[in-house]
Image (cartoon, rainbow, N blue to C red; front, side):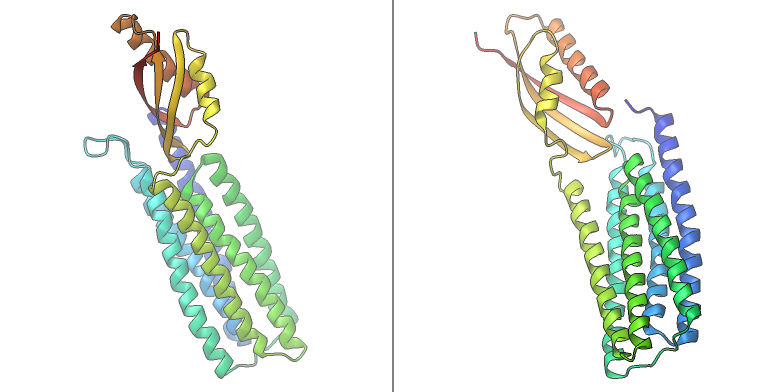
Length: 294
């Protein structure tokens, strides 16, 4: 069961991770844009702009975490945690904007191609920045899973798209080196596709939470815990919704119709206690008591 102190520590850790990733993303972005302009590589410059959008998504994440970390109040008795999920849609929106701009840039380069200058140095820049991005993605994804943070997981997908685009830029530089400069523009369009796919994945995951998709698929686990409580005859209609770290659960149980009200109340509390002990991510349990068939 999560306490306010644990919740504060949880969001402080998410905030710290986002700040670290923001610093790394903008360092990588600056390197790509500067050397993309110097070498006249549209795909490297585009990749650098995408990396700057990674930083913007970190800022969106920081704002979302600030809202989500607010305590429960009279207007929000279930808390504010879904703000984190909602703001992950902002990351998808930023990806969509970058995708649109890259499509325009790629199509423009197809009609009026520029021949980028390819050097060992430009290759080195892309390889080093890609290695940094892989490290950032692994760090952020592992933290996102450990902290069950929609913002960190979504942002890691954003960074993963950046890794794929960096790889595409390296391929395009090789293509230019061997005499196929038009592939620089084609690669920019491929980058746009990867970004669009990352945005789709983020929206899909956010909608699952915001539209109350079932969180606990295996209801037998819940049923086993409930049936272990003395006095419970049956358990059914188990439903779950919410974020993976903030699950609301409701279920029906059958009890002996002759039980006194205070005993029924005790059993309900014991069911709730055992569920929250077994499943720490469950924060709210509603139990509907029905008379067992005699």
